Amino acid sequence: MKVAIVLTIKALKLGEDKLALNRDIVVIEAPTDEKENLDFFYKHIDCNIMDGVYFDGFDVFCDDEGLFRTDNVVCEYNGAELAGNLVITAGCDSIGKTLWFDDVRDAKKILEIKAMLENAPFIGLVI
Image (cartoon, rainbow, N blue to C red; front, top):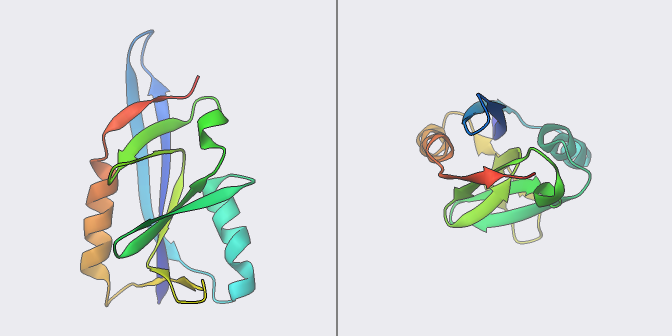
């Protein structure tokens, strides 16, 4: 089965100066029809304009306007500061077609990416 990793992240205010991060990281089935890809990204990122950040071995898609949305959490992922929810894919081919993870073949890679997401340093909260 072809899958993507989805990170939903929210800050929970515990007081005036204290925050707790709620990171929900799930592996979900990817669209089977390429025409559904954009809707999939927009739905899971919760955005109107998205951007892609390309890492070695995977791509991260985020809200291009994430730093302008109040209460978005900003974290550092492999040196890139990204705000809000993320969708992670296996990359893209030479013509830009999205490549999805294979849930069995890529299980080790998926676990490594999930660990990176869980341990990403908190940078701040958009206010």
